[in-house]
Image (cartoon, rainbow, N blue to C red):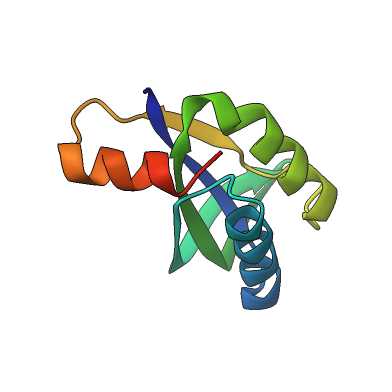
Length: 103
């Protein structure tokens, strides 16, 4: 089973928690961590700095398209960050945990 971490950022805690609850409820993710971050980026030719919430979503690789669709439906940003990082090394027990807690 191939596993990934999907990252996205949200402006508010409420939005981050809404995405998290839906992904866990629908068994698309086994675990989601929400971290407070400060983001620096360029948007429409302006340098921006924002406080955001970073979601680290642990799941099976086959769930990426469904998760991307869910995030896009809920997200308030015009262009939400939705990236997947392949997990190269994982303990057998954690891999089993992801398998048991996702579709």
